[in-house]
Image (cartoon, rainbow, N blue to C red; front, side, top):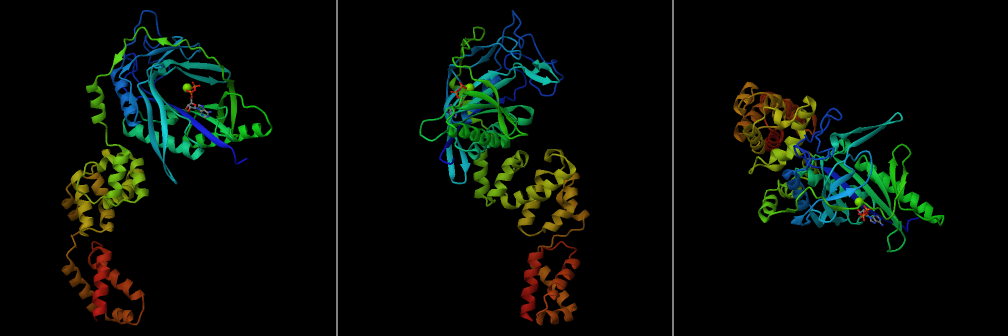
Amino acid sequence: MNDYKKTIGIEVHVELKTNTKMFSSATNGFGITANHNITPIDLGYPGTLPLINQNGVELALRAAVVLNCQINKEMHFDRKNYFYPDLPKGYQITQARTPIGVNGYIMIPLESGEKKIRIHDIHIEEDTAKSLHQEGHSYLDFNRAGVPLVEIVTEPDMNSDIEAMAYLEKLRELLLYANVSDCKMEEGSMRCDVNVSVSKTEKLGTRSEIKNIGSIHNVGLAINAEAKRQIELLEKSEKIIEDTRRYDEKNNQTILMRVKETGNDYRYFPEPDIPYLSLSDAFIKNVQENLPVMPEERRKTYLDGGISKINADKLIQNRELSDYLLNFSKINLVIASNLLLGDISSYLNKSNVSLNNTKLTIENFKQVVDKLEKKELSSKNVKDILNDLMEKECSLDEILSSNNIQNISDVSLLREIVLNIIKANEASVKDYKEGKDRAIKYLMGQIMKETKGSANPSVVNQILIDELTKL
Ligand code: ADP
Ligand code: MG
């Protein structure tokens, strides 16, 4: 069974984050009362004319750029004709012949290193209405009709569930950071169809397409379930029929929806109501040069700054924290990221707020990180002032003094305190000399008490041991 090679190609539909639909002025929004967000253009009423949403083209271009595609500067839209209730016009406006981007690729991270996944093309199209099948009835919500989409099609370059999932994670990360889409699979703004085949030879096997899988995790499960089904058929010397299937999560199997009609005739022809588009060099250059800071660049900065790989990934996964770090050019990244991923994240989770909605100022954050670095504050100090930092509009000095925290950084001052404690606790010093470990803990406790917890414990510990060994 193991000598079969799996082959996977993926088609992803992503809704673009524009304000309005691709060809009309209706809002591009989620969660609006069904059929309350439609214009006559979205329904293709006679006499209406579509108008291209420039921002839609710009976002699609940005996606094409981050997917390393060649750009089709001269492009047009096509009509894809078919009859289905979710398609009010009887055709979908798409780009069959001149996709905005072709021949791209992305690199996906695998345990064995990086792998290149080629992008066949990325094209702009409009979304269809959403159909809902409930209790024997079918319902249609035309709010989605005309929402701008890009479809991103890979070459059949993936060979396992792991690779397919890594591709989707990477694609999602790129499109999120490029501000192209919010990529929420649960809201349908990112949807994927997965093509799977198996073969024992170099020649690819017949594929099945699994439509609309609801999560990246389920893509992995669906691929394995489908490959197993195909291998079982082949082992029984049966033929695979090219078909379209869906993934049934409950029984972990793929279920036939329809056999793929061969010779599908969509009667594609250029959309006569939309003029041919010519993207100027200036327009393309502007998009290329004004990309947001992309994840790879951020990851490099993090790793160069000494952040662990795990924490770098955590930051990238949390766009808000990652963006926050962009505010600082000279900062200890390790300390800053520990603070963001540790105490600050717990605070945000507990209070259910976003970082932008707290009172934490850039100045205070920077100062706290600097003081931690210079050991002028301990992590305990930071925990003690965290609520104030997040909730009060005060300077750090004001917060520190209202919390009775002095800056105990001065080593000579600390040494003085240590010596006093040693003098006052002769019995414990004797215990220490006799090898009783508890004695040092007791002495540390006395010093921390004296400094009200504001001294850096590791610095104090070092001074204490220094002085004790001198005795
Ligand atoms: P269609 O026109 O039916 O959508 P395409 O040729 O555009 O078909 O391919 C759709 C997707 O299927 C692409 O991502 C492609 O990589 C993938 N694909 C094509 N052939 C195979 C195969 N034999 N096994 C797995 N995936 C395949
Ligand atoms: Mg296709």
